[in-house]
Image (cartoon, rainbow, N blue to C red; front, side, top):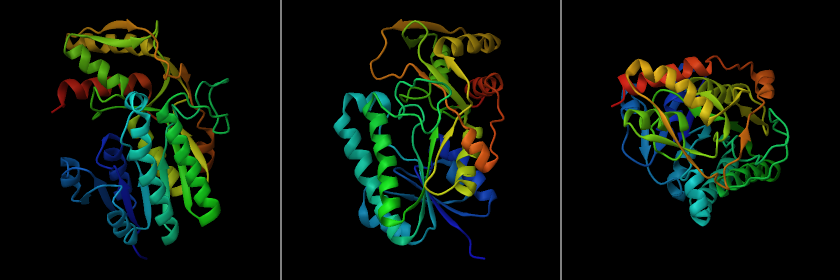
Length: 311
């Protein structure tokens, strides 16, 4: 049997670093595509790594010629930067991804699109949120993510693109870099280490569904292996916690390291969805996936990493 070859676009980042070992365990040949030189993770696993521009037509076509499936993790902006420059959000993300869909469809390649479970729905009217819930994004980031999903569906109908979409909740865990515009838990821990106050927008902040990165990685790979074509899957814990509740949990663990965590309350931001909690029952039904790491254990592991292993 020929080895399945998987291209992971944006696979050198936080989530990709946890997906790659799982793909290797399946016997796949894995190529990681990124913008810069190969990070230590790639060197450790002795993987094929290619550096280049995702929007380069010839570059991406050559990669698609030699791979069977694509996990698309790359995204050039975060919610805050997309709000500041929505045109750049569109230009940097929409065009290259639609190009990917078109060329993958031509070659009969499978695409797993990692979208956003936290922004595509907008302000939900019931919780936890099902995939079928109405979608009214209130940020350019969420709108572009939803548009990418719509283009995947379009190419599925008109060009027989074999695609699956996953909508992750808020990922956290060991290895996540702070101060990147995403990752409240990592940023809160790093801010406490510096003796500064973490910013909360509103009285208690936003309520989010936090999924530990190892659980998320298993969910993504489960969707790749066992998910149905043209389906969309939420990946979350089904539990909502406010920023303030996360801080309370962190404060208990941080005391073991002689650190305190303080909060600075700022006005709410217009592009922040107030509450987001995902229903992942469809993924559980179709693939058997279940989250394994509790928020308390996950936070403890994350704090340990930041204080003991961060380079």
